[in-house]
Image 1 (cartoon, protein in one colour):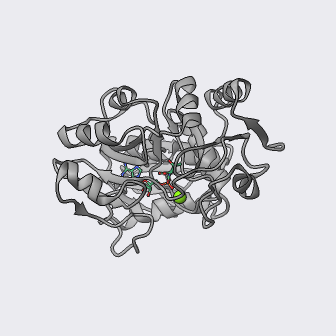
Image 2 (cartoon, protein in one colour):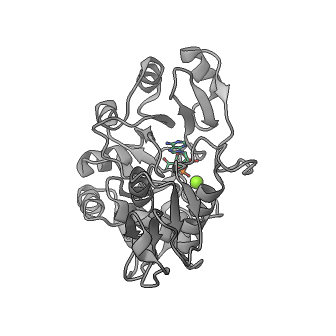
Image 3 (cartoon, helix red, strand yellow):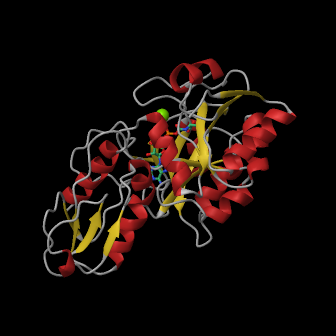
Length: 323
Ligand code: TXA
Ligand code: MG
């Protein structure tokens, strides 16, 4: 990738940023909390680019940013509490994790394979206008490399990601400076997943006392599988398989095939030409597909540990341990 374009948030800059996003590229943009690193949330390939640019060593579900509550209701199911919260705090620094709707267009990778989706309608005028022009959900974690602080200025974004993303849309400084509050509205109750820009008191004034759960990003992985934010296949997962047992479903990478592949039930290859970005894009949808084949075990061939391989292997190791 060449140099990162710096776009001014005028008519021309906004339409160019929207065109890049619609074409599957990566654009950092301001929100009222922090700058987000945006990609078309409906494209597994575009979302894989976010992970490659950030060098994130694990796949967490990403927030899908949309222009309005109506747009959000295409993606997620809003119960009574979620609806009240959206009406009270959107647009603004609140993310609602809700069950995916039948009409959900957000990719499996952005949802990290889960049946829930994190949605937010930002209030920053540049973000709002960009989302209106893109006309699709935009996945965006904070626009920093993994392990660095969240950026509140376009300069911060460039300091971390120059040359790794297509463009940054400069909209001045992000005002809140802390990330959005994340609430899960999944089974009647409301749980706090991450404190943030909307204070607890304001939320409790709308829906009463909150249940609590640590931010999956911060929580020590006490017991793999306990984190509700991780997708677990029903099938057992067997890693570094060099040989296939009868009836196993098989997940491959590249050209190296295990022995006795003819015994396999279903076989999918994450990337025949050995691209880790392509493999990341396919990971969750292929796991789901193999799980749905009814096989009791999914045998996974070896995947290199470099670049996105680290995040792919992290996810697979969790899937293998989740029992
Ligand atoms: O203010 C913000 O929220 C910023 C701006 C750019 O909008 N974004 C941000 O994204 O902080 P990120 O990726 O750093 O944090 C997203 C958090 C993760 O901890 C993730 O686990 C949680 O949202 N999340 C998203 N969807 C989820 C889901 N379906 N279930 C559980 N957690 C979810
Ligand atoms: Mg972050």
